[in-house]
Image (cartoon, rainbow, N blue to C red; front, side, top):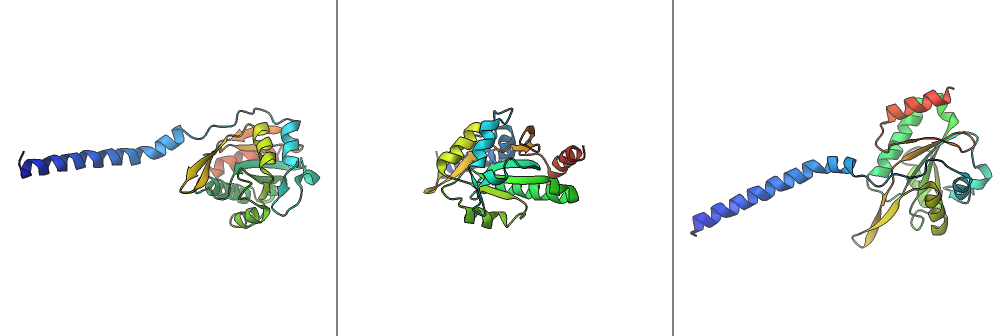
Length: 206
């Protein structure tokens, strides 16, 4: 095969590779939505699950048990502060929900429970939450305490090595609890803030 033939073959191979990359990139958003992290299996939140949260401490260093379960509604989300996209996007939506609820937001306590207690100290959580909304309560604890919470709530979390450090693959579901701690419903991590605020507002008005 001459130089011209080899050049044409190389061009053809590069074109095929380029098309393959474009198809892969185009399919990533669809694949992400179709194959997210496993969702929680818990259909109820029992006393064990509630008590497991009571052993944690908030981002101010205060033990949760003093005010748990709350007399307000609670919107609970699990994540970690080194999360690159899902967690900040979800916390931004929670902030939007609070803003859309206006005065009714006083009836709702948003709670962010870390899945990465080794890095997410109370100080780290406080600094992270300050980027979103001071009404969000960050919770952390020991590795054993967080494991107990995730087991009781049926929350999936898996450490993924990344460039000498790690990220977490985890459930993105939000839990809506009634005053006293009974599970009312779960929201998809992909639910938009307007829909979530509308559903919560209807419950708060009853």
